[in-house]
Every structure is written in C-alpha cells, then in structure tokens.
Length: 587
Ligand code: OXD
Ligand code: MN
Image (cartoon, helix red, strand yellow):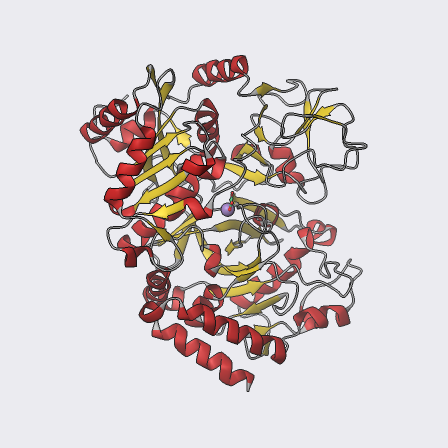
C-alpha cells in the first residue's frame, strides 16, 4: 500500500463522503483478480464464459440506458469558462463539486470502496503518469486491471509525490438524469457519477489519458492525442512508426493491427501495434517526437470485428477478456456480435438480457457500441517496444475521418502549420461510440473534439508551438479517408490490410522517395505511385478517389470558415492564414 499523505488524505475525505461498508486496496495480483471475478459472478454482475474456448473471459451487460459516452453530460470544470472553450461543456468548479458531492454522498453505503493505483504508461517510465481511482464497481476494477498497469509498483513509484490524478467513480443508481462526467484540470481530479459504461468510468482512459493529460501536456510541453501508434517494418527490417487520429469507431483498432496484403507479407513486410487509441508524445533528446501508448489493453468495438477485418483483435479477445453488451450464445456459453460471422446463435440472450434467436430476430444481438476489453499482450502483433517506456520515434502523423465524398484517399500537408490546419478541419460522420444521431457530418479537430480538456483554440496554439520546437525533426502530416462511397453507397477503397498500400506511400514521402501532385489542399499521390499489385482495383478508380474537387472544397472552405468562427480570438493567426491560402488556391 502507500504512506503517501496526499493519497491517504484524499481517500479519507472521499470515504467520509461516500460511506462505504468496506474498503479493498487493489494490488492487481492473480489471486485478488480471481476472487473479484468470483464475487462478480456470484451477484450476476458478470458471467463466466466457456473456459475451454475462452479462458478467463467474462461477459457483462450495462444498464440499457448506459451504453456509450455521454458527451452532453461531460464537463470541463476549469475556474474560467473561457479555459474550457467553445467546444466543451463547462461548469463552475465550486458548483460542480457541490453538485457531485451531493450525488455521491452516502452512495457507497452497503457497497465496497475499491482503491485502484494505476500507471498510464509502463510503470516508472519518464513518459508515464499515475492515477488513483476509487470505485464501487468490480467491473471497473477488472477492466482497469486490463487497461492500465495496476499494483504495488505504482505506489512505490509514486512515493511521496502529490503528482497524481484523483478519480472518484460512483455508480449510484445509474440514473441518466444525474449522470455527470466532470473534469477539474486545475486540480488533477475526475468525478464520474451514475454510469457504469467503460468510456465514462474507466477513468484512466478518456478522462485522464486525454482530457486531463491534454491539459498537462499543454502546460508541460508534450501532447496527449486520440491516436493509434503502429510500426511498419520493411523487408530490410527497418521499422518506421506512425501515429494516426481518427474519430471514435472509425477503424483505429483495425488500422493499428493491420495484416499486410499477401504480396507485402511475402516480401517481408510486418506491422507492429504499439497502441490503438491514445498516444502521449514528447520531444526526445535527439529532437524527434517520441510516442508511448499509455494504456495496457484494448477497449475495442466488437461489432464488425472478425477474422477478415481484424484477426489480430479477434485473437486478442481469446483469453483474459471482458465482453460488454454482446450477445451470449447459450449453446456453448460463448459470445457473438453482428459481423463476427454468418452464424448468429439461435439459442442466445441479447445485450439487453432478453432471450434472442439470431436466426430469426430482426433485433440486434449485440449493441452497436458493444466492446471487448482485451490485454494488449494477447495481440499477436504487439510491438516489442510496447512495454519499454522510451517511446517510439514518430515519422508521420495521420489524420482521418469518415467522409463519403470530398476528402481524397490520402494527401500530405505542405508543412507542419498546414498539417495543423488539416487536423483542425477534420470532419467525420458520427458513429455509435457516443450517444446522439449516427451518420451526421461533424467537425472533429484531431479527433479530439470530445476529449480536449481545455480551450480548443489554445490546443491549436499548442500544436503550432510543438511544430516550432520540433523544427526540422517534426513528423510529416497526412490525411486519409478510407470511406469514399460510390453512387450505390458502397465503399470504393477496400480498406483493412490494403491500407498498407497508402501507408507505404506515406513512408516513402517521409523518406523523400516519391514525387506527388500539388493540389489546392496539399500533395496528392500520382496514381501510379500507390502499389495496386495483387488487388483488383483499377488505376482509374484510384484516380477517382484521389480527386480534389474544387466545387466540393469551396463548400468545405465555407464550412471551415463557419466552424472557425467559434474560436473567436483564440484561433491562431497561423490557421487563419492557412484558410486564406486554401481559399486562394481554390480560385
Ligand atoms: C473509444 C472512443 O472508446 O473513442 O475509444 O469512444
Ligand atoms: Mn477512442
């Protein structure tokens, strides 16, 4: 345990507030985890799955009103409203504490307080940070033990320091009307009440590793980003790393674990997964940008994950995994979700707990945002660098969204500031990862709209400043769009493993090995420079999705101008200039 006074003082204060019947210090040992699993199964909170087919795997169902992140109930409680900025919901911290303490007061009565010490990033790494989460949910404890590094080593590393993030989670009654996910960046504190859904309650993830960490990063000169990290190894054994930002449920996990197309595999190409959701990046001694994945597992979207789309993710879920809100196949006590295979179970229970016949029902068996929480070490292509903590040097930063039109398959920004502009204008059609309408185009700068813990105008400034600091060592910045549709509404680009063809072009550009066409928005590949070998895809079709339409981009520029107005004086002049350049290029 710990003798750290700031930790003990805060736990004591929270204990007085929530009045637990008992307290358990989580040490992350096998014995403790086993005992907690057994307890959760005895109360019905979790279901033990077929231990031969899925060893150490469990199923959990959330309340039906609690299945996704709740952006409209997520608040940044900075002292000044302006510091939360126009894209966040804000609450005055004094009022927020009062409201949350009123909700939390006495809410652990008859329950246990679990104290989870966790490290985001390998324990002890200079790039890592420590948090403590208090929760009354075994499900949260067991998920945190997969998603983060938990245990005594964390207390030992923390020592007497008071540099750690406080996180209080209270399930309360899962009352959607009193659900709040609040962040106090100036106090390193997170309070989440009335939810049991991962993105709202695994406080190390979105709340700490993105919202609080982005604020820390701005003040300390580093970056916390909603990015996967992957390494591409060429046949000579050289590995280049890229970090890529996509909005939620746009295929980050698939890209992070991509299987090279056969031709590439034969030549000796390999892909290594460092992270699938979050990157913390800092300038290294050699001046380059280094990234770690602060997480220790994958909280992936289940539907659509299958042996074709992501065999590595599927393999990662075969042991030690918690499934949330998927269908339960009663015949063999396993799990199923839409898109897993073409054999939905007949004798099953759907994600709401109702009997379900997948062969006849027109209802879904799994919720569209159902998840697996799987240990990273299970992943067949996990990077040997994963646990090292020094970080991997990033050659390219890639932005991407889900756009049926307008945005070409890939383009490169002209320079860093133009790349920041490209990130700032990212737009995507919404998905089921958050509550609200699905399929509506929304601007989601750097895929950080729901996750930036401070004023997004200041966040853009921070990006510009990082570029100045990195100078000639800065990664090159690109944008991709795997999601262009044809007239019948079908995806044109095959995606998945074939995305390596685009990554190869990106790496070649970083190495100055390939030319490009300059367009109004940046550099677009010459169609013949994307390797289509082994793919039934014509160069003409490729030209179609590399096209930059002046009409569409003129409309886009109007949309950007409108969006930029939100930021008022906070919009960096560098981005205003970039917009002017785009407009003049389109004339
Ligand atoms: C996630 C998300 O869970 O972005 O990663 O919603
Ligand atoms: Mn995410």
